[in-house]
Image (tube, rainbow, N blue to C red; front, side):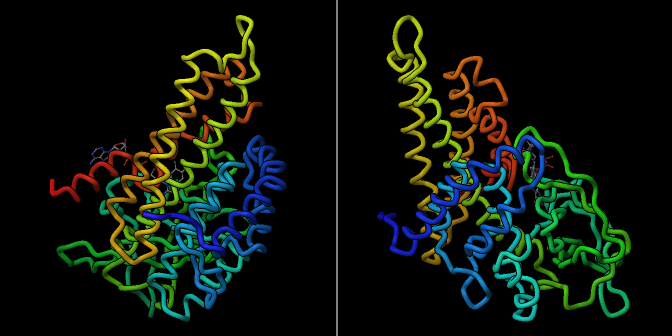
Length: 382
Ligand SMILES: Cc1cc2nc3c(=O)[nH]c(=O)nc-3n(C[C@H](O)[C@H](O)[C@H](O)COP(=O)(O)OP(=O)(O)OC[C@H]3O[C@@H](n4cnc5c(N)ncnc54)[C@H](O)[C@@H]3O)c2cc1C
C-alpha cells in the first residue's frame, strides 16, 4: 500500500496548511468562545474551492480524491475542530446525497452553489426518537397536490441554520397509509419554505462553532422535483452517504490527535518540575510515545479506507474501523494531553482544553462507536 500524495493533493495540502495557520487558527477561537459559526471563514474556504472538495469540476467542485480530502482535513482540523466539523459535514453528508443520487437538474440547482462555496449543505436524518435506529424515523412525506407534504421533526442537524445555509436534504417515511412495510425517500427542503422552522442553535460540550439545531416541518409542501434519487431507496442512499462521513470523522480525529500530541509535547519540553522538563519523566514520555504510535496506526486505517473509495472498491468495513479507532484515540489522547498540561490544561483559555471538549462527539456523530462495532461485526459474518 502506498498512500503518497499526488501533485494536486500536495498542492491542496499546502493551500489548506497556509489558510489554516494564517486564518483559521487566528480567527476561529473567538467563534468557539462566542459559540458562533464562523461563516466568514467558511465563505473564504469556498472561494478557495474547498467547499466543493469531493464534487467534480462539472458541478462546480474541484474533484479531489478522498485521500486528498483526508490529507486536507489533517491541516484544517489541526487549526480548529468546529470549522473543520462544519466543513466536513458540508463536504460529505451535506453535499453527497445530491451528487450521488440527484439528477442533473438538482445538481445544477442545489449542488453547484454548495460546491462553489456559495451555500452550506445539511443532512437531516436524526430525530428525537430515532438516532442509531435510522429505520425508526417518523417524519412523513405524503403525496399531495402534485408533490409531497412533509411533517415531522429532525434534531441535531448541522449547518442548516447559518446565514449561508440553503436548507436541508432530509429523510422521511414515504409509504402510503395502507402499506404494510415502511418506505423511505429523501427530499430537499429549502429554507424559507412555508412550514419549515428551526429551533435555536444548540449548545454542545465542544464543536461550539458548529451550528446544530432542531428542524420542524409542519405541512411543508415540496414539488416532485425535490425528491432526491429513488423514491423507495432513500434510507440506503442516506446510509451510503454516511459511509463517506465516517472516513471524514476519522480524518477529523487524526487532526485532533495530532494537535493535542503537538501541544502536549511542546508543553512537556518546557514545563519544569523537580528541576527538569517534565518530558524527561518516563511516565510522560510513554504517554507521548503511545499517542504517536496509535496515531500512525489510525492514520493508516483512515488512508486505507479513503484509498479503497477512490479506487471504487467496497470500503464500508474499513471506514467503520477507521472511525472507531481514530475517534477512540482522539478522546483518549485529548485526555492524556490535558493530564500532561496539569491544571493549566483544564482551563478553557488553553487550546488543549478546547480540543478536549471537541473530542467526545467524534465517538457519537455519523453513527456511534457501538454502531461501528455492529457494522464491523456484520462484515465478519456475525
Ligand atoms: C454535534 C452533533 C452534530 C450532529 N449532526 C447531525 C447532522 O448533521 N445530521 C444528522 O442527521 N444527525 C446529526 N447528529 C446526530 C448523530 O448522528 C446522533 O446523535 C447519533 O447517530 C446517535 O444517535 P442518538 O443521539 O439518538 O443516540 P441513540 O441512538 O439513542 O444511542 C444512545 C446510546 O445507545 C447506544 N446504542 C443504540 N443502539 C444500540 C445497539 N443496537 N447496540 C448497542 N448500543 C446501542 C448508542 O451507541 C449510544 O451509546 C449530530 C449529533 C451531534 C452531537
